[in-house]
Image (cartoon, rainbow, N blue to C red):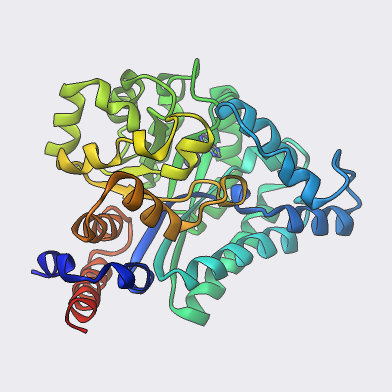
Length: 350
Ligand code: ADE
Ligand code: ZN
């Protein structure tokens, strides 16, 4: 088994090995990949005025105290997205970076309500994002899929409205999720719209247990029938939930650098990623909003490795978990897992 071979990878080759490993990113908000330079370029193109003098001044404002303090600035940044070309440019810029980090699969979140609220139709959002998804497939053979997220600080009626608007594009996204301000907005608020999404055959994910209590994770599983939990790090407060996640291999899409920037943990040394892995939970690592948090997918493997003394076997498990937890066709997942084994074997024996 190549997982044991991972132990033989020399420390100075770990970074190259992680880059070469096939892996999936399962938790990244496309609006959270918008770099300040691109925000300014799109603002100029669309004649949108920003309350910052330059990209550098905007970046200086990225000092967050919690999830809400980040979301306020994140929604302001997304206000420069108006045309199909803007959505294409944003997604293409991110997928290009991700391709260089060895990702073979990406499941991209998008927040249509952030745009429909400003008068940008769902059709424009879908056209731009889908063009980038298809180009990544044809140019690099990268497998990319879209997941539509409902904003939980808005009402369920508003989620129903945007879902109705998105249904003509049903074949362009594979699932629905739930994001934005968690506290005070439990999954139970969205039971009916998620039932509708399930009836459409869509995959179900939900942010839960980022800042919110373990009960929100239970609700996401029991009421929304979530197949994966985004974040989920608060599960450690509930031993029964930890056992349930491990027993049913319900994946968690953990975002270590995000959790530090949003003060979920004080430092990476305090993060519970290793606790989750050692409990047998199918944890994965992801970048969440890399333009705002400054950590790309590779960083989310390598920085916790240093801080938590993760072994190369842990990293191999994280990459394998990301592939198994993806919604890609099972035959493709199997092919990637074989490639991952081959990659680890090659680096261990070189
Ligand atoms: N939207 C973008 N990033 C998010 C996060 N970390 N939590 C909730 N909603 C988000
Ligand atoms: Zn997120």
